[in-house]
Image (cartoon, rainbow, N blue to C red; front, top):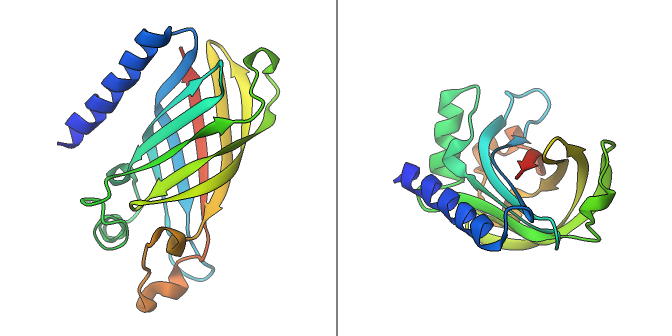
Length: 184
């Protein structure tokens, strides 16, 4: 079923690109999201997912990203299991999404030097959607753009419960870093 979900999303992206002209949309299926939720003196709480799908509509600045929760990889397998089963409930909430618009986006003004843009949109994690404003650094690459940046979220804002037993081991704010190489 997981493979079907990935292929279905990819098919939707390809259909959207074909229907609207591939020159307007830039996509990736190999974007990267890392998160860090460690606290001092305790074991590292961090993971990375290297198969994030994203699409950028160049003419409007519309942006969307989708990450499958079970795709996050931890250094410690037991931590990964607890993350999926106890915290993120990934069987029930299998994905997280960010949908929004990059303000004042003009692809013709993008250069090799990263430029800051503001993305305003909705972030959905653990079945809960909240408005977010994120700074995105965008630079030109061969055949597309690179979009990078970071932002923080609070687990309780997305109804993610951290048991008192491990509360001191998990940061109050989770730092999320992203990197998307978006091409035609």
